[in-house]
Length: 119
Image (cartoon, rainbow, N blue to C red; front, side, top):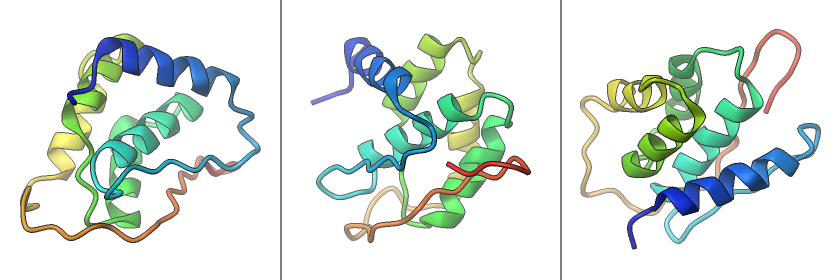
């Protein structure tokens, strides 16, 4: 099932209630597409002061197998008014990554540092 604007709105509504000092567990069946997109979106929500590309690079470093669902990221980008920056960051950091032949991913922790905090 393709992500919808309603799915993104529901995710963003949930993230609005998230206590930033608590951990957030995000998962999907394989841990490659939808969950990594949701983790990226959550990090962008939690750290609006950090450049989207910096967060995308942190995601790729935490999980080289991550293939964030670009539709989900694009919808969130639009909903959050990021003017394409989130989508562009995910697309640009994914160059050279094979979209196929990827095994299910191992759990990983996405840490975004802004000098004082991590998410």
